[in-house]
Image (cartoon, rainbow, N blue to C red):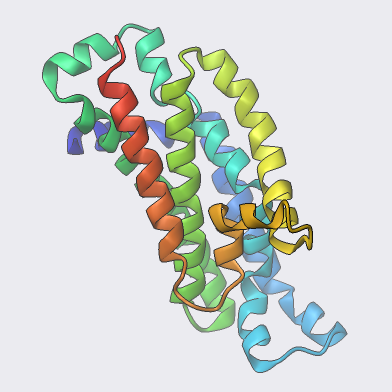
Length: 229
């Protein structure tokens, strides 16, 4: 599992798309933190809001485009191996569960490193490292990674997951934010199965997001074990 994870982790840093996304994250972190004082001078903020204003650019970017970024890089993390016939070689070397969880571990570690560097840049201006907000965003990314892996297991063709990844990446945050704030009783219950409802709370119910991610990985593992390579 760790070998698979290491391979996936380093392979993500080699693509042009990864470099571009990392650049976007770092630039957003730097400039949003650097010019956050402009927002503080324009609107009146509470002390807690002033502490969080440095991360507003990074938060907005990942809330709106995090799913698109994750799927753009990893939409074919599983079905690519099957499509290129390398999965048969992998299953002779290790278990299917090790392959799936290794892929998850490598992708999650990649995003953890990217997010940690972004927050370190923000901390230069904020003079603090906000562990709670970091945990919130990381839990959202873990949820998005699990969803991406599940789709890559369910859909065998990389071309289709690339198309769906773009659609879901753009539509999912819009839909998630809408159901979180809608007053429609027939729709509002859906917010309890989306991560955005738990992210707007100032407590550690973000653990629920991790449970959803674990459930998606469990389902993906069950399907993967029963599928021909």
